Length: 508
Image (tube, rainbow, N blue to C red; front, top):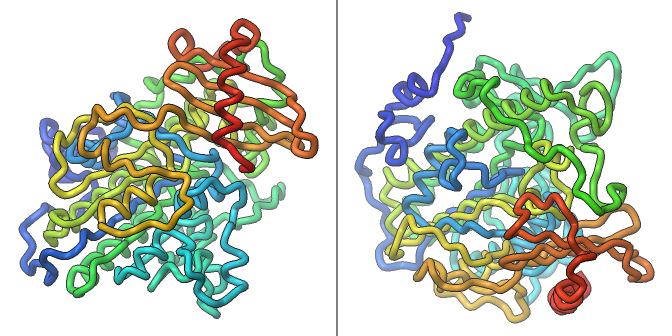
């Protein structure tokens, strides 16, 4: 096969997008956006919901001010909706973050629905936001990774869903990879990494791949195609729908078609400016050895060590995966518009957490630093005012449940931790929450963190005794990259924020 060298200009031209029209077009779209030949049957009904979940996506996008990223479709959504500049997840790791978002309450477990599945009978209280919508007459469909289980199915033969009572249909298209988990770790040519990766010398595995294949050569291309087909089916139905689409990339392995790699010049990709531990902390408590990268893949020279050359390669690979998933999102958004669904559909783009790309010497999530706890959140609602104007107030993942219920006229259950973001959708200058709360454990310690407009407090305590092990305080006015722990210099601030943290965290 003759390989074509793609540049940004040639890539956008081939996708039908002029350089001056990137915001208005869709990279990787199946074709030009045209008027829908058949309009949806419903009129005057509750809005539909299209929830797009992206795994490990940092807010390092064009719409978030990063000019080095090719993300025209997400940027277009931000220009049409509300971009939240200070959105924080409840825990910077896949399972608890997704459990928290779907339930509207902080969850420390990777699967908070075990008791509901074992019970077998539908409880009075909805177990998830999707359950609330299904109970309210919505057609609910899950594609890809929305909860932690790809496809949302625990037992395909018995059709047992990870989030019970919530989905009319839940699946992950697998193609040549046989199972959803193999699709999640998909490589080109039908190969896959197993969910449990065994480090065998005769099976070298790298954390990146750039095969010259079409978008469907990796699993997210199939997720996008399935979502497009579901939209066509749902548009013909009488009931409103709640469609959740979970894309795998840019999660490891950083595998994407070659043409997305060709959008970037590796030599021009900057490395992290703070590839060292913060001052005045115990690194054994606050940091990790990049285990997801260095122990899951054959990655020299060993855990915790990545050379500048390899760091630039990894950042290049991550960037390529972001552009690849952006193109798949564009296909879904363009089909919704072609079908005329955009006029009555709430669109949410959410990521389960950020990802260290060398900051503080780490690669991965699972920390309590800003770079891991902050992630993109964009909401586009029909008829919203001041579209394209960002909201700078604090928002949390647990806020999505009451927000979607509010937008669609549904009554959420009592006891949700989250609060509706509709005031910020109506007015981007609305204040939002005063603080954002997150947590992540390390060994026998639990780390809880509180972010305010100026400070980030991180308090580590022993799980059994509750005794403090370390306190960190970062001043975002003077130190936005969180490089110096100033807890010792501001005991009064620490005391006040610890009290606020204890009020927020409860037992989570």
